[in-house]
Length: 509
Image (tube, rainbow, N blue to C red; front, side, top):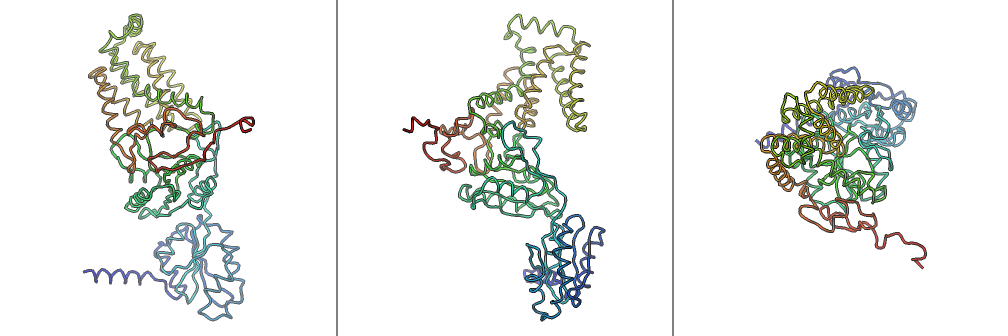
């Protein structure tokens, strides 16, 4: 059985090999490409002696490169006919083609794989080897400031959909020969380029091997975005919390790689994944490290507080107004009762309806054209809020609670999805069991977070398990000169020299 399988593979390989004449090779390629209208088969003669052809995909190649660097030098060369046949191909590569990147292939599948990526194939009569010329020239978006991670102070360049531009942007940040890019191909039909980037002496070898193994094991028709890769290689697919980081900014990716992590680039996606990930990353931004630490520490504490408020405020309102009125101060309780007097629904129903309306408005604002999306979301919220209060359907205190929840939910955008699910869960627990339900829910969430891992790294590190020497960049951001070591969970190591604290000239004397 093994010999039969081996023999069949050899026969398929033999059938895939190039033929000795240009016309027959073109017939096979046209058949394999089904005579698609965007495939160009350009036949010409080298030195008035040898028939040749060029195959490429219109729209994926740079026609200036094809015309000036390939076809022109081949057609206007008269030396080719004077050479022995066995050295013609070598003469073309060494003395005629001006293109900087060329290679030889000898199968139709290799030719198809190359031209579908934007390269061009040169086929010469009498040769069973084709020359692949790098001629990629498809339209791409220029490097611009990312819309999802805007900053006041710091670099304003963001990744694009072209993978080589993205790797170049990272290489501009890290001029280290130990920065490694490993190229993989994923997707049976899309054959998408996926690049793993890491600094060789910083990243753990076992983590690199595991990421490489998981990506290679993907067997799927197509990869259209880095979100596909994230969902197919993550550790905890049933958790509401993402355990794979991502960013659209080269400086953020560079900073994480310098901590000992890996980055995963996907061709066609401006979002780059980072592995492993910690929970505290959700509360850190690029600007945290470009500004002075004192105000940034205050802002970071606000992010933690805002996330807590966003997931607990509606549930807390329901629990206090429906089960534990005795915990409210009497004046506040009277104000809430007076505002809610005459409303037809209990607080549980009111909160549920307003939460659904808020999510509908948010989704509508996102999906509509940008020119009118913001206006619809803002005006819709004002009109609906005012109308529901005027009609006596809900009370003013609930509108305040929902508004505060909506604002604080956007303080930590990377946790918006998980925060929404947690908010709904706490709301249901509060509507059923009151404050006891909220307390039990918090314990469940903490236990779940403590059990999560990202490629062998505890997700809640350095909080759980506790690592006191790594707390300089958790709740607050300590001065840069105090962060001497990299996080231990990514591999212990020194990242700056001793005595980096700024000193005045008289102190030096």
